[in-house]
Amino acid sequence: MIRTASYAPHLGSALAAGFMLVAALAYNLGANSSEAEARAVAAPADLDSRQLASSWPGVIRVEAANRIGAAPKPSVVETSALTSEPVEPALLTPPLTSGRPQLAVIIDDVGLDVVAARRLIALDAPVTLSILPYAEAASALAREAGAAGREVFVHLPMEPVGVEDPGPYALTEFQSPSEMASRIGWAFSRVPGAVGFNNHMGSRLTSDRRAMDAMFSASDLPRSMLFVDSLTHPRSQAASAAQAAGLTAMTRDVFLDHVPDEASVSVQLNQALALALQNGQAIAIGHPRPETLAVLADLSRRAEAVGVELVTISALGAAQAQAQVQDS
Image 1 (cartoon, rainbow, N blue to C red):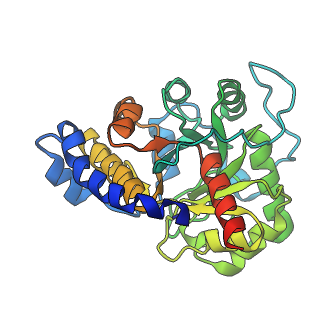
Image 2 (image 1 turned 90 degrees about the vertical axis):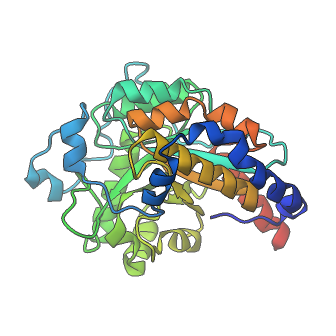
C-alpha cells in the first residue's frame, strides 16, 4: 500500500466522500450484497493453473519435464501479428493527475483468453494488463495492448505453498541465481514492452526473504522497472526486497474477484474506491473472468461518481518516487 503526505489536506473531504460512497454506488450491490461481502476475503490462496488451463483456451501445453527444466533462451520470442520489431521496456508517460484520490487496477492472468484480453484493451479505463509469459498469445497481445496505449506487466509465475501449479518455468526457492535470471529473462522476452511485473501465485517464494533477495539481485532489470506485490501471503517479503534492490515497489490493497460473482466483485470494487478515498491511493487486482469484466465495464463512471481518479501503475510509481524525494 502506498502512502503519501500530499493527500493530508484531503482527509476531511475523503471522509465525507466515504459516507457518500454507499449511496453513490448502492444500486450495484443488489439484494445479495451482504452475503457476498461476508464471503469476500482480503488475501486468497493461490489459484490453480491446471484449473485455469482446463477452463480457458490458449494456454501452452507443456510436459512435466519442461516445467522443471532450464528455461528457454530469452531470445526466443513469438512473432507478433502486429510487428516483428522488438519493443523496448519503457515506462509510459504518467498522465497529469488532478490531485484527487487515485485507484490503479491490474488484471492478472491475461493471455489465456484472447477474447477477454481484447475486451480489456478496449475498456474505457487505464487498467494494467499483467500477461502470463507462458500463454500462447502473450507476445502478440502485449504488442497489441502497447499499440493501444495500454500499460503491460509480466505476471511472473512463482512457487506457491501446497501443490498448486504456477505454470511452466516458475521461479522456486531452491533455484540458483543464474537459473532465476534465465527464467526472468525468458518471461520478459515473452511480454515485449512490459514496464513492470507482479507475482503469479508465489505464496511460498514471496514469504522467503532469502529467495526474494536472490531473485531481485539475480535479475538484470532496469531500475525503472516497477514491481507490485500481489500479496498472496500475509508475510510476503517481496515488496521490501524489491525496494532494497532499488526498484519502485508497491503492494496490492484489494482482490476484486476471489469470489467470482458480480455482486461480490462489485462489493470489492466499492472497497477499493473507499480505500482510495481514505488513503489517497489504492491498488486493486482482478482477473479476466466474465463477472469481473462485467463490473469493470462501469469502472470509469463509478470512480468519477465518488471523485476517484483512475490511473496507471506508472502514475502511482511516479507519485511514490516524488514523495520519497520530498521526504529525503
